[in-house]
Length: 130
Image 1 (cartoon, rainbow, N blue to C red):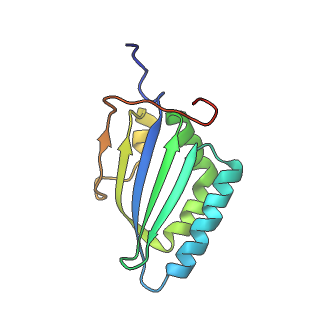
Image 2: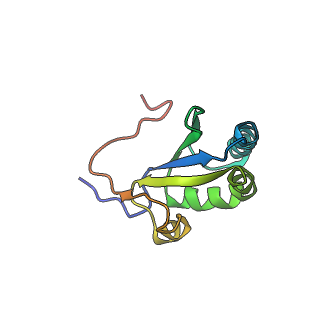
């Protein structure tokens, strides 16, 4: 078995956002615009946002190739993220994978619950690799 350098293997980010009361429509518009921008210009392999309107929660799940992808994503998506955050607060932020110290510095502070879990075992199969 080979060892992979920290931050150079796939990483999953899971962010839970509480949407501000009365701002579901504005949040949804902002998230659509942010995701569209990232799809055209960004580095993630995948971004999916799931909405729980009854509880005014949204779950954002991103798959990144490595830590460098996350760093570039934050730069590219900064304006869109700011617009989304006008309509919500982060409730939880979990990271699945080994991330670089630079990415750790970008994560929410300790006031936001969450954890970083290193991989134990797994594989990644992308389109065209089956």
